[in-house]
Length: 89
Image: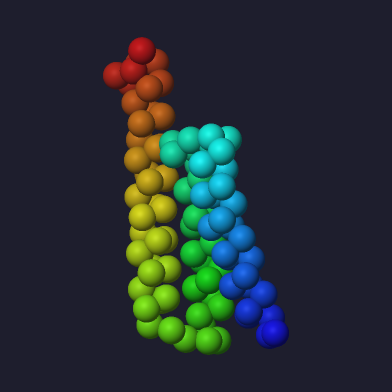
């Protein structure tokens, strides 16, 4: 296996880690770690695709990155609103 194959496998590990932690209720959807692990996984798979291109996988990774970033932005916004003096409790 080439080095970029290993990078892709590490990306898959991060996807599975995020999903497993969510299913085992060790993280919540609003945790940065959940979106962060998904983002890292997608970025690593995107790197591996630079050397072993697949259009369908490229599209999936780009969308996964966008979805992860939107989720992280939403979490940040909710946390800021929850601060005292910012419309929160």
